[in-house]
Amino acid sequence: MLRTHTCGQLRLSDVNQNVVLTGWVQRSRDKGSVLWVDLRDRYGVTQLIFEEAKTDADVLSAGRSLGREYVIQIEGLVVERLSKNDKLPTGEIEVKVSKVKVLNPSKLPPFTIEDDTDGGEELRMKYRYLDLRRNPVRESLQLRHKMAQHTRMFLDGQNFIEVETPVLIKSTPEGARDFVVPSRIHNGEFYALPQSPQTFKQLLMVSGFDRYYQIVKCFRDEDLRADRQPEFTQIDCEMSFITQEDILNTFEGLIRHLFKQVKGVELPDVPRMKYDEAMQFYGSDKPDTRFDMKFVDITDLTKGKNFQVFESAELVVGINAKGCSEYSRKQIDELTEFVKRPQVGAKGLVYVQYRTDGTIKSSVDKFYSGDELKGWTDKFNAEPGDLILLLAGEAFSTRKQLNELRLLMGDRLGFRDKNKFSALWVLDFPLLEWSEETQRYHAMHHPFTSPKPEDIKLLDTDPGKVRANAYDMVINGTEVGGGSIRIHDRATQQMMFNHLGFSEAEAKKQFGFLMEAFEFGAPPHGGIAFGFDRLCSIFGGADSIRDFIAFPKNNAGKDVMIDTPSTISEEQLKELGIEVKVKSDKL
Ligand code: ASP
Image 1 (cartoon, rainbow, N blue to C red):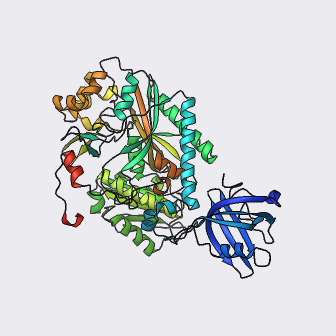
Image 2 (cartoon, rainbow, N blue to C red):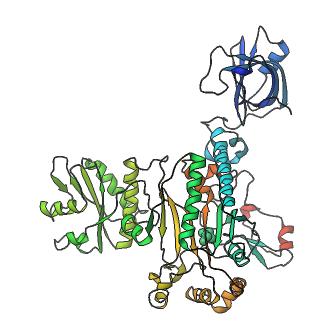
Image 3 (cartoon, protein in one colour):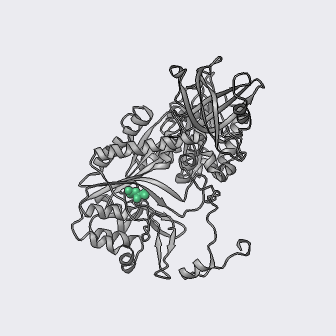
């Protein structure tokens, strides 16, 4: 080895030892008579010292010529430091250098390689390999590594078998577009990259594998959105001969195991909520349950008083922002502006201040008496000091708008602490979802999800009402995983495809292999997949998933480091039998 120790290793007990260290020059401080150099590697930073009076002149001058990020090897004696640094594990010692060897010089890095860097996002992405030298980024990836190891340990302990499924496959509809790969040998034909290994894991159940998992890359060609990656990783799992209850218990076990092992947090039992309830009380299928602030419906109490906005509304619903009654006009105006933003889309905001002195003041005092307003605050169980915020309109969209306002108030009131964790199962999702765009029903989860048997009869009459054996796990208001109990017989699967608007021939062309497999003894089965990048970012207390991915794409779906997507040569295109019209700016 080129070194005897790492840069994070030496302590007081090593004083008087001669050591060899290797690493990167983080920075130098030259005080004339003394030169200090911080040497860094993955394990830490060790201070090197060169002294004019004691160090060999050649060594000192070599020390002075070291630039930032030079890769060096040094030999020297471990000595106790005069002024110690208690923030650094190696802060009690330094190494008196007797030999320096430059293993490789470095150009000046485009940003400082320190915890707080001066590099902007784009620059950091272009030089991601330098960004990865920084502690916070490396630590995020180490957390990811730990999460993966503990996931494997837990699932292995539960008899799951890790199986790799192919990457060049045929389209699986999970609601997004496929990335396609042209075939050279079969010109005009294409592979698709998996949006998930869904059909393969089901086939493994038909094969009798009983319990499968894979930490696997998935690809979805979706519209760009902040923090969405075209390729991402799932912890993908499937089990046979189980009920929904078994799946919930097994994977709640996984999540609690991860919290315990990786964060030292004892996560309590994960509560469960029905989809309908989540929508009714939180206006979202992924409520943030770190705080309460449930919706209260006061539609009945508002009618017949000539206030047109409420009179014409299907729903009048609100939240109680506790302790906010003394908000200023300006603060309330800000909230009104917030709900009126096009992204939220409300027409306006009604408020009721239950003042600390016990009086009630509202923006609709003209229409409602004090007693009537007291009736509202009672329904909210409000106390003096509370502020009721109300929205009105069509039920579904009003709840969605109120969800945004609830989250904003949760932020303002400090309820959304990243170091507090609240997990939730959301159950009984609808099987189908109406799409205005295509004017037909789509599978809300995917077409292999089984309807609740008691709801099958509604498929012909009221398809939107059919519930699925489908579930999501939500942590802190983010969906981290989702799955379902599957259909495992051909007839039901065929019927499902019919309802989704596939002709028999189309269904056969795309999924004939699966339906045929169902005729060869398919066991009842179900599963789940967790978004691994997102899960890591939640464990890391970060908003963005990017730092938990070694080489992520930017918000435009590009890797600016390797510069992709990019054009390919005429020759490659010809071989693939593809003709493209290339925009002139790309030539
Ligand atoms: N394949 C599904 C998904 O990617 C998960 C599952 O149903 O197991 O969302």
